[in-house]
Length: 272
Image (cartoon, rainbow, N blue to C red):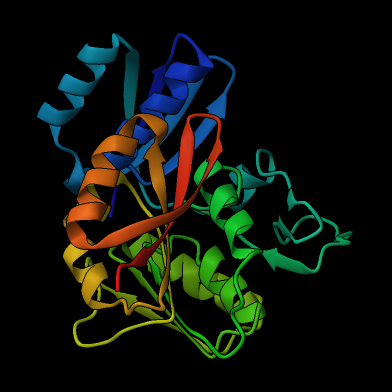
């Protein structure tokens, strides 16, 4: 499957953050940031030209595009992927990094085309929130698993079963590779674009984007009990009111909010 590489030229870091959020909602799956440039990747078959044109015209951002065939991303990421450390809780590194971690947990990730290396603020926020969760013996759903990073951490923290869902072939293949390289055995990978029916979980992790979360709120409700801990991220602070309204209508109560830059992460529970 061929992908398209877009090279955007945001006029500020803030505009770059907004652009990532909007592009994620538009189906883009991977990003690389350099000074003055943001590269974004999308399967050619997923591109909505009308949506892209409206987005770039609204932000007044210049861009160019290139068609790229499937490639080995290891060398490219080796030059741009640095280890991530979340306090003394967890560190995330690539296989080509030296193992020098002093954190409680270490995750080895080869990101390739998938989203979720710990570098993006929302992934960092989800990792940070997971430090407060007791996973021992719990069943976990990782909706929009990407690289598999959250599912891997959940198993390392003692989860008895983890169901990791994604709709993208690149993500499924990458997650399987990362799950294997981290020695995980209790993670089930499923290619799907929504949650399973007639099954509930102790913990639900969803780091995707606002539109996907809003569209799947009824399914998240069905997969939750009053004791289920739900963590949602992938959206901006400016989306907060829209999301709060939808969560309240769906029967969820917000327990806490964490923020990194313009991005937020919500911990919610089903109302009794």
